[in-house]
Amino acid sequence: MTGPMDRLRAAAARREAAGLRRALRPRTPDHDGLLDLASNDYLGLARHERIVEAAVRATREWGAGSTGSRLVTGSTRLHAELEDRLAAFAGASRALVFSSGYLANLAAVAALGRDGLIVSDAGNHASIVDACRLSRSRVVVTPHGDAEAVAKVLAERDEEHALVVTDAVFSVDGDVAPLRALHEAAVRHGALLVVDEAHALGVVGDHGRGAAHAAGLAGRPDVVRTVTLSKSLGSQGGAVLGAPEVIGTLVDTGRSFIFDTGLAPGCAGAALAALDLLEASPGLPARARERARELAALARGLGLETADPAAAVVPVVLGPPRLALAAAALCADHGVRVGCFRPPSVPQGRACLRLTARADLRSDDLVVVRGALTAVAEMTKGPGRGWDR
Image (cartoon, rainbow, N blue to C red; front, top):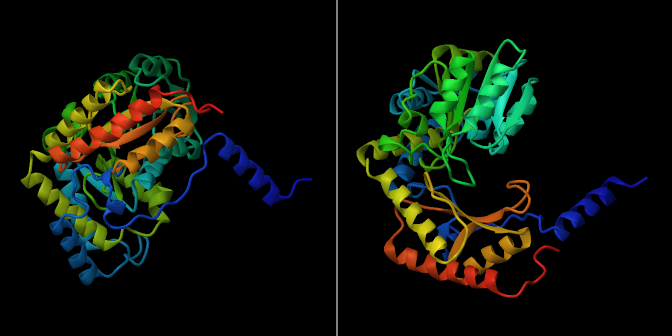
């Protein structure tokens, strides 16, 4: 019989051989002197003076932590103000704040889809996948972005109720879901549509109000949105936006809401300040999208495989995990920090670099990026180095 540590070591060795080991790499405040194209700080607000100062003020007034779950002592007037502001900004009836976007997805999908049918896009984020598993529902995964396949599954179901769930902007490929077509399918077959706006809020649509708002679906009672505060808003936390009946259900039954400590007050204060800044600077979302298009054009011009970005995410597909790892290290050597996505985060054979645009990128930053991507392009065209081993 193999001992537990032997089993874990053997599994780690197999991941090492496949180029799938992960490691924590603590960074300095300035990203080790590298140009940051790896974080989700799409609007460049995480270190903005007004955002940081708001976090400090809230921490001094309310303390470092919320001190309890939202239903005990973890709901402050600051949380209530943030929920009102988020709902107003995104055009929703109500909002409910969580300590992370991951937990917001767990609550929304698992509670609203319980004991029914859940139809999930093949490209959905891991938090949605985990929520589907927790829901005790039958789950059908449909091809990426295929609204007709979703409609077919809904039409053939035996379950009384159903839920359709999709990312708004997909976290690796950077494309946007066909939200209007998905909503039409959901309405036709009596289903609820849940849209994860994590990579859309602050970047897509008028003032960055999100993809559902841009599609004309904001405020619809049969559309539920989840958002994160940790990307465009430069803070931490998440929220669910929806009708009063939806929010009431999550307060009563959402396990990741009921049993988790509330969001730290400093994060709530920072998110409120970010909403103020976003409303006062309506050009920020368009600037982030423009920078993303420029990054994609750089990659495409060098012969690298990429996509037309709908928001701030720009993938550079390389294929084998070891090649993606080597390319990320090469980018760092040339002064640029990029994301490196390998299975199971992406399908086999689709390991990639993920570049994330920021509204505050300058023209001279793009010159540095060009140098890094040029080196990657040259490496991919050189003789093979056993990337697939």
